[in-house]
Amino acid sequence: MTTSVATSAAGSSPWWAGNARLVDLSGRARPLYEQGVILLPNLARLGYGLGDGGTIVDSHPYFVVGAVHLISSAFLGFGGIFHALKGPAILSGSYAYDWSDGDKMTQILGSHLVLLGGGALLLVAKAMFLGGLYDPLTQSVHTVAPNTNPAEIFGYLFAGKFWLAGVDNLADVVGGHLYIGIVLIAGGLWHISTQPMAWVKQLFVFSGEAYLAYSLGALSLMAFVATLFVSVNSLVFPTEFFGPMLTIEFNRVPYFVSTSPVDGYSSREWLANAHFWLGFFFLQGHLWHALRSAGFDFGQGQVTQNVGGRVAAPAEQVAISQLKA
Image 1: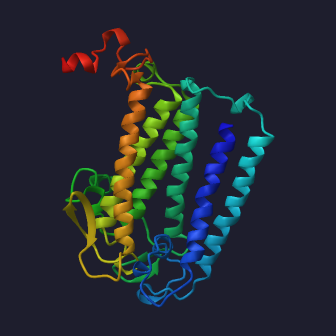
Image 2 (image 1 turned 60 degrees about the vertical axis):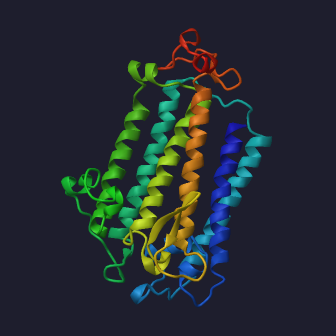
Image 3 (image 1 turned 45 degrees about the vertical axis):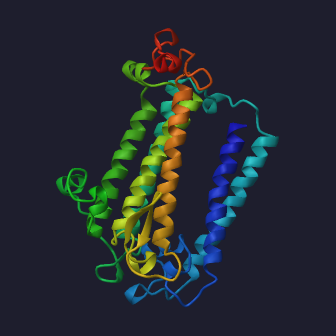
């Protein structure tokens, strides 16, 4: 059942992406960022179908990408149905796993890291060998050689007003992807070939709900980082495709608005506000599931199960009712 759900969920993403891209191609003689589209600008910054000045002169690559996503979603969807109806209820052999089996979970983590690293290196390949990227500084598409100076690349982690979002040239962007791709693949292979150390098993809780909490926490962080990037960085998110830069305002809740007038809401505004609120709710989900995975009973206001890790046993917990008293 888990396999069918995962496969079906995997199919929903390319289905949405393909549909949205084909709908976006309905086409109006206006800037991308004023058409309410959020996917085509991402393809445009990769250099597909662009002429001088960032003008889209060929929409065929966008159609192909949308069609491929739709077709792949159909295969994944049918795979999910097959596993739900015909597949085994419990996987066996090398595919068998148990949520509490830390050894198997670290192998699955390693596999995901390798795939993520491969994705990062694909961007490097696109920049270097497969047509290049769109450069807002020259308003043209060209190949990009990565900056391989580790001091400059990793220096973004410790300096600059906007942290990673302060990157100001494509060589550093591609170099960063090169390094992170290598690190992810190396880390993935290490996780696949090793087992969690004793201190790791004592530190973390190994359960399905704990993994959900960890994942939501990571998604929340990435959503907030994406909010920062799209709000302040015009290199990775060119103004030609995403619209003017943003500023943050507050009216009961924080929200991001364009610094220059646009017709409606720009793609940059859509992305920044959507990622901010997704990050916010992912964070709430992380806290909720993290507490539940730690054995916390919201009805009783205290931990009622001994789940291991760094979570104290129920007898050592102080109930919320006692704190209020």
